[in-house]
Length: 221
Ligand code: SF4
Image (cartoon, rainbow, N blue to C red; front, side, top):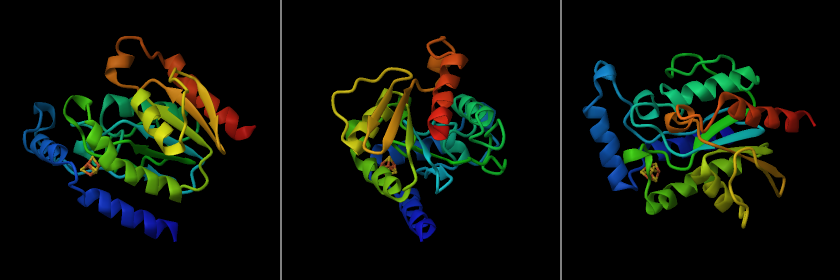
């Protein structure tokens, strides 16, 4: 059963300590909490992917945020990137509600699975090359099990590079809204909805929404 295999991989991910720098960092962040989350218990472990195991849409992010996913225990949950992602997924019928704040909020993905290139929050959101390599086998294993995936949305150039490695795509440069066809997949590139991009206008709501409109269009075509 796929769900048993997912459980097995997920357990392996949660217990993983392959990257000593990151294991140390997420543990420290969980102890030295920021003021606004002083009263919360941080997750402080690697994060698994989550969503519909029969999903046709796979979203690949970079890595959890120190006080977002690393705090709440779910990717894109409890930070501003998660706010943007939950809202756009809801507005395009890929989620049941427009917010993703905690693991107890009943946020459910429809026909969508969310994962990341790296599962532990890195300092300054910058994993090292070796850390990407250490974490890559988890993505490979997840991807094999997600056999219905047709569309892959890559959030940011680094997520796209990881997807290129996964699907052996060569010579296709990243640009927002670009669609690449490879094997049975359509890969859509998007800027990451980080504050750095959304607060500066590098990624507008219209540009962001357009990525999910493309995915919807491909699904019904
Ligand atoms: S980033 Fe991935 S490989 Fe490294 S410790 Fe975390 S889960 Fe393990």
